[in-house]
Length: 157
Image: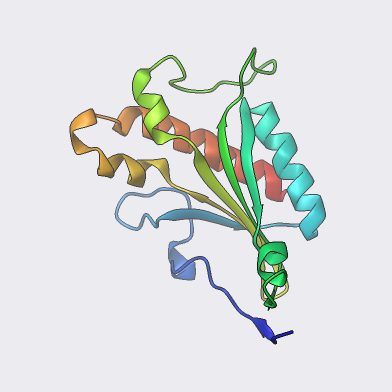
């Protein structure tokens, strides 16, 4: 078995890791969890469900790479989409009825261990919408991003 390798999933300087503030927006929204890794995964699943999301795919990169002889710290990558059926009471999934909404899904949320801390990041839909500049996705992406930021914040508390 090879020695543990460090993987850094975020390149945003610490002073810029905050809610969207315009000029300093990074590609992800990042927060450290107050919980252990497994408890953070459980909290994420709960928060996703409360806000009308479902886990489409969960990739356990630690297990995948361990099967190939690489030892890394835990990393789970969630691909999340809108839950089918009625949303939980109080869940507001912005733009679900808008055809443009589907272009922004699935969204990525990462949970990983970095320097002994559990970190949760969400890739920002407002950056993805730049891939489709003629589609006018900014309003739907901003609404979706607001909900993802809330999911991350609820997960790490």
